[in-house]
Image (tube, rainbow, N blue to C red; front, side):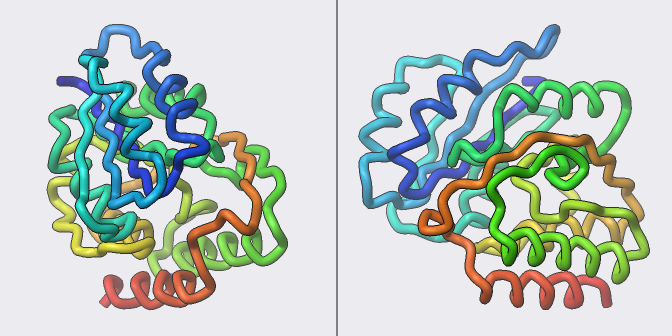
Length: 225
């Protein structure tokens, strides 16, 4: 298997079907690829909707009986995948799957890690606090690790598997994003950023909190020393 696209999902009944249809319609020329979706203990109709995709050979479904967090979902997806390239695709319709092939091509050209940056592209409908918080955490990442990272928290990330396998990830929640970035930068691995377009969903549907932002900063500092 050349490429695995990991899709974490928790209570995404309004978007998961459309996102999966878009992902499954993508084209990665010359690559054998799969989609691994992780239902992280959803309490809505997410599991029922995923059941309708069971006959799709390219798709694997991993199920958590209880909600364990985004980090746990990503880690289960990584463990359940087999591609030499691993990509993350959120399931909430904020990130257009059609932009994913461009990130994968950068890996094919020799890059080890590629992030899709919302702040190098067009980020729409972000609240002031969400925009500020993401930019602040990215600035902290750049300062703490002496690197240039414009969007540490992006949900669009692509890696060579050997890079992910060497990280020994531990986080269960949203702190998985700073943990991944911190460990990559500490190893001296360069992160290439590609501009992407992004449309934030309604504030009331956001699952990330101010507390997650504080934990992200703590995680960045913890793995630096």
